[in-house]
Length: 93
Image (cartoon, helix red, strand yellow):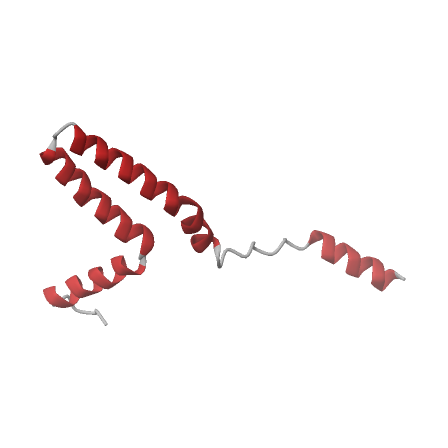
């Protein structure tokens, strides 16, 4: 009986396990991806209809950069690794 009480007490006192966040990034992309595209479309159309071509091009470049980071987050580490290798920094792999 004492062993069982100790086992239950140890279970209660033990820290909870970390939540499983393996698919969290995909879930967030599925939710915010379409919203992001709708906002980009609306703002882009606004700039085109008001004939602000320079602002439209600036917005388009910024939107593409954000979309690449949002949809392909691994590209940041790949580009950084390429820059490090191109600069010849020692210790890079």
